[in-house]
Image (tube, rainbow, N blue to C red):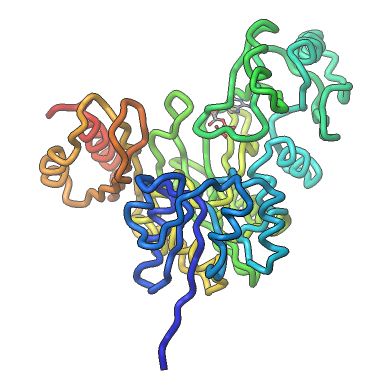
Length: 404
Ligand code: ADP
């Protein structure tokens, strides 16, 4: 009797797809990939690749043939196409109803407001004049709610107006801070509107640090929560992740985990959900953003948790029992490796591996370009300062900014 294993259809050929595929290998799970080019990170390692455009329904349908389930490396497949695939009888996980909240920041904010989840004050805006009007209101300190701003019926502004500086975000298509502007005047507010897509205005939160609460949920409704982590951003891009978040009170951590579990359940998320959070000086935790796929803030789990985010994502989309999310070490630190001036990172392995035998290097097969995320490192241990230093050293050495 021949044994068959399911085929997971992964839309998107980036590093998240590459590492999810890697996690499926020990389970014998087969992967089929829809990739923009044959050179994409995951296309280099998956044997069954369809090269095509994820925005084209016919391409998606052709790709989906022979897949037992479809999942994603990014959030950019049009929601209507996902509904069409579901209507064709193909399980899409996470499904379009859930995924829309990660695709559209306006939809996400409206839904979280409805759930009573604490978020930065916000409202959808039509044009720079709209922004100027409520920012002026905010300066006046009236704090009145409502207003006529907004499109799509989601013009909620819990807490009312707020003054410049204001954070403007295109509601769809942003990543790694692209699509996010901090504006201080009506003149500066013009830029985001040039793309012609709706724009969400948010108060600029004076946060003390950024946290992420990562959970995984299966169709059975089983869910696991990873320790809450601190995510250190540099120039809008994640630089370092520390697991668990240092100094986070156990009660606060449990609260953030419960919040993420509640969001996953109420939105019907299947797979990995990252809830990006702002921690404020007055002790509040606000939700910044949702991502429904493996996430940069969860890369530490590859080497620092009993079951990685990638392995649990694979299990979840196949409705298998989820694995233990607990940490293996007291501290695990992930540092992203960005491209620098030296295209040859391999030569740096010798030094990095000799210096830190606990170091784990994960490269994505991408050409090195200055500032581009091309890999990450994980390391772990009992002394946080030492673990941070080792991770930062390795990432800097690989990039070429540290020479000794
Ligand atoms: P992206 O979808 O590109 O990841 P995010 O909404 O996560 O965009 O924003 C990127 C970064 O911009 C955040 O990690 C944070 O550092 C900063 N940021 C976003 N929103 C706010 C806000 N309301 N107040 C202050 N900083 C913000």
